[in-house]
Amino acid sequence: MTVLAHEKQILEYQETVQRLKKQNAHHPILSSEELNKMESNLEQMKQTVYAQLKPWDRVAICRHPGRPHALDYIENLSEEFVELFGDRAFQDDHAIVAGLAKIQGQKYVVIGQEKGKDTESRIYRNFGMPHPEGYRKAMRCMRLAAKFQLPIITLLDTPGAYPGLTAEERGQGWAIANNLWEMSRLATPIIVILIGEGCSGGALGMGIGDVVGMLEHSYYSVISPEGCASILWKDPTKNSVAAAALKMQAEDLLELGVIDEIIPEPLGGAHLDLPAAYTHVKSFIHKQWEALRSVPLDLLLENRYQKFRKIGKFESHIHCDA
Image (cartoon, rainbow, N blue to C red; front, side, top):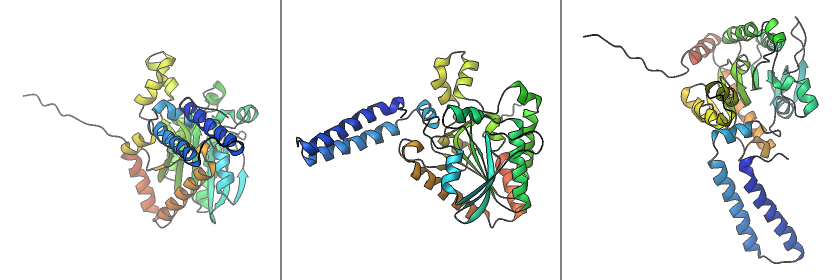
């Protein structure tokens, strides 16, 4: 089990409580009231620690090895799933998982960015960094959804699109830009969910939709904290400073209008209570589909356009010479 820096004191106290309870079962030393008080102190410690998380702590939660990924959500949310492969132009990109799913009786096209869980699967999935063919595969499945009037769900979790020479040779920038253009006018409801890292154009290339939800400890940013620190300060020790300066947490993005809703996570992060995390995401999907299903298509597309036109805040000043 991977223990994050802010979780160490909780784990140590938790192990102490469990050890004392086990010893007490054979050789009573503490009263039940004393044990209950210790458990109450443990819960209070959790509340205090998790209420004081810094942006960099939340990045660590977002990257926790036990955090559920796209395939986990697909497997645990859908009653049925049929995966689709290939972009019909070059090859299949394993960093993108796409297919037809049924969730609570409703049919969807679900497309997710998958990182993998162990060394073998991470290499197979290219650490969640899609190639151009991945974005083309995603768009092929989206067009299929529009053709058969199926709503779309995209699950964003990537450190960025693959930056290698081969991806650039095959038109990485064009593939992302084309997805932005096509998704902005795709004639079917689109629900976007940030389940982990949402970094740069790699995430945005699948992030245009009618509603954007974000798990509480995910992040969404034009660049990773490490990349920002290396550019601005050329100092990797500034990662935590960059994480705070980027305003990439859910609360900041909700205020700026980049996302529409924060999806709550179990106390301490999704990795600590997987069933609860799946339940929250399923509830979000159901609620948004109920809201979108009755919206006329022309109004849906106009609202989508206006949503992204209004993102961000700025001030303008007019200077007049006397």
